[in-house]
Length: 518
Ligand SMILES: Cc1cc2nc3c(=O)[nH]c(=O)nc-3n(C[C@H](O)[C@H](O)[C@H](O)COP(=O)(O)OP(=O)(O)OC[C@H]3O[C@@H](n4cnc5c(N)ncnc54)[C@H](O)[C@@H]3O)c2cc1C
Ligand SMILES: *[C@@H]1O[C@H](CO)[C@@H](O)[C@H](O)[C@H]1NC(C)=O
Ligand SMILES: *[C@@H]1O[C@H](CO)[C@@H](O)[C@H](O)[C@H]1NC(C)=O
Ligand SMILES: *[C@@H]1O[C@H](CO)[C@@H](O)[C@H](O)[C@H]1NC(C)=O
Ligand SMILES: *[C@@H]1O[C@H](CO)[C@@H](O)[C@H](O)[C@H]1NC(C)=O
Image (cartoon, rainbow, N blue to C red):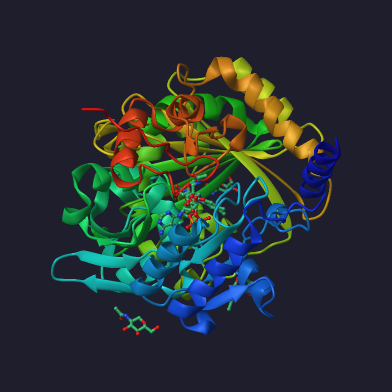
């Protein structure tokens, strides 16, 4: 009885003081000593270090996971070269402490720096490993995982090449490429992982592997199969793409009173069928749909296309602005209608005044006009969020589903991202409930069997790993895994079984290992 009471008491203490590690503190101590012995002390931060909190916060991008109850790492390593990363993994293996890797820290569930359950873990933060080495003659570049996509764009755009990846300049290359990476050039050129031609990986045995050494299946898996699962990707070699010296961009808001429901209904079929050098996305919010566009050409060439295909938009010459491709990224992302200096691509600071929750869908059949009218009613409720619709078609949809782990290709009309925000520190319940209720409402109108979702818009509501015998369960992982990866889930699990059969690299939604018996 006494033992039982002590056990219950311990368990409850763990609930209240979430950060308490579940492994023995002895192994934590040995682990930290191992780190200090193999990595310069100025690159290792323990909870008792004076700068621990600021290093931890340096790339937290969602204040929702920066609270006293957040389960924090027992240590953070900020490597400046590959051997520090290898040493951190080897110390972790030796002393039974898992590491999580953080590049830009944008994970929607914060899994690169927090754990949902009390457990002892450490963070390998790659922010110091962020060089971009461009080979102009070959139109390729090596980019380190700790670089932001803004730093990548800034480095490649000095002459004409560009790179097709996400919009927000502060996103980290490491997490972004690990999950796919899409943005304004996706219709012309596909997504980031479609252009990755080599990579350097530290695996669960601490080995440093290039494309050839990691093997075909693992190289396939790291290109979109989800961060954390296969090891720590240190750098990526990418093929650059070309864009004209000037591109055209426009931002046209259409209010519900001015016919937003009709324009949106028509956009669903027009947007994915436009010429591949034209991309028009929509931000849908309370009372208004904002059409944001990038065109790889001039305003004079763009106007007749819009007048022919989507005259209801009411776009005219005064909405259109010509600029360099690098400028267009910020112009569309910030959306103020004002030009932004390209040096802002290098700004790694992220505003931290609001917390957020997001989730995603893919649409394969146009949604009816009456349903859009109902959606606008959802967006007019108290505590509403926004929806961002990114059009597919052209190149992103032409790549076969199994060419990379990212399977949402042919037949997709557009992706929906749902997001809700609230002031940091406020009660999240009404906003989170709004997004969950809208997600339930949308079920009949979006992709089914599976209901597809984008890994990089991570949502733990879709499911979590279940650990059986110290290894994440392949069967249980299907629940979320097939939403993110469709038929590629099994192949990812087999690749995981090859490179990390013990499931050392693990989080709440990492790929479980599947070991094929011969
Ligand atoms: C404001 C904002 C805007 C966004 N815009 C877009 C967009 O336009 N297009 C789009 O496609 N997505 C977008 N995203 C989603 C973004 O692509 C993902 O959140 C992405 O995973 C972020 O990468 P990160 O390195 O910043 O995140 P992190 O939190 O550092 O990492 C995310 C996940 O990947 C793992 N990971 C990180 N680095 C590595 C590595 N080197 N090796 C192996 N695993 C690693 C982490 O452990 C974690 O599980 C946006 C997100 C935010 C917050
Ligand atoms: C990495 O840095 C350490 C110093 O911490 C140095 O001894 C080592 O030679 C470096 N390794 C490489 C591959 O540059
Ligand atoms: C569980 O797996 C981890 C990582 O592979 C390992 O360090 C640990 O010793 C394992 N624990 C048990 C009880 O087998
Ligand atoms: C362009 O459209 C805007 C708003 O829709 C309108 O105010 C403006 O007068 C139009 N300009 C021209 C030249 O038609
Ligand atoms: C960088 O971005 C932050 C957040 O948006 C902003 O407050 C800051 O002024 C920017 N810094 C510079 C140098 O532009």
